[in-house]
Length: 236
Length: 298
Image (cartoon, rainbow over all chains, first blue to last red):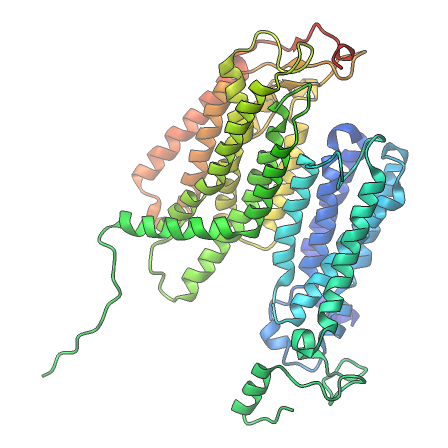
């Protein structure tokens, strides 16, 4: 698994992103009042970096190989602790130059990374080869725009800084995002094998097998059965 | 011998007709792009609430600049990459690359229209909720200065951002380049927005910068200032940058690199340098401090 992660995660892109995150948070730590929008930008970059790592550009090939999607995703998820370590390190390094909400800021990065992981996993299970590219393309500029423009900041600030802002509302907002993005894809995939069921049946070592507990009788999607028949295979 | 009549697809009579069709298609694609929709939503949401009472709608210019410009940079880079994929997957591309690029450049008019709508709102809001004497803008700046501020910092980035995205999409289509470029551009822009005194004169080199605001002085951290430079010439400089971006994107196609292309590019570059210097050295000569302290503005 380590060998797989070392070969498939885009470490150059991850390294460049981590260097930029450190650079952005250093600027924030030096001039927090002026540079604060870069904190929200960095949160978006954390999520985007995780998302990029979940792409499988050779999906057409690797989907036919014995290793299951969950096994490959677990290997690729090695990037999550790396990015979160960098993120938490930046926050800890800034110390009391940032507002005194260290764990809230850590949670912002963790929720961003977790959301990226869950959304890209759900899309990858649905057959999209490069869901991370699409997710990162959406989340990084959107986070940047929200951090810069701060719309509706009086009611629900996405990236609060000033002591007078509604920190409780922001916490509630991020908690809601956590529920939506972390549980949403899981619930969607749990709804039935038709959604993410293409990759359901693997043995405990992540190899294709006859079935796993709870999914022994789960049928393949219609189009998969059609392809199998066309090739002279069985299908269930 | 028998002859077989092969049905050929209808080919438009002229390049202009082809370009128009392509431009309409690309405009539709841009208008449906999720990032454009998100950016428009953020811009509209900012217009719902009343602007800050000290600075009016002048400091709301950051909203379309970020939501339509920065976001548009990534959206256009993504569209450019996808257009290239589509045309190459068809085997021999049905139209030359420069025509596709020109169509994408015209698609940037979609966010620009939203930017112009924001500009109309901002002009109305500036008149409807004028800033108090201790607010911003103040003193010896005329209507031209104010309108140039709103157009250069609010409406024009909605065109410039996507055009920069077109350049990135053509020349650097690799994964991650456009979002990371947007992030670095934002960081550099914040550093050069006039808050740091040694950088104030040269700040107009950047494609987005302030010409004043509640920057503060010693003893009054919220005192409003008017910074040196001319927003009118800065607006001309930004228009030259937009033109240069189109020229640079078209130049990715070797077919487009004609003598005419080189002359236009050279002229635009010369005009950009000249207007940048004029934006730097004309207009307000030095930083003007508002005589009314910020504490006097409730």
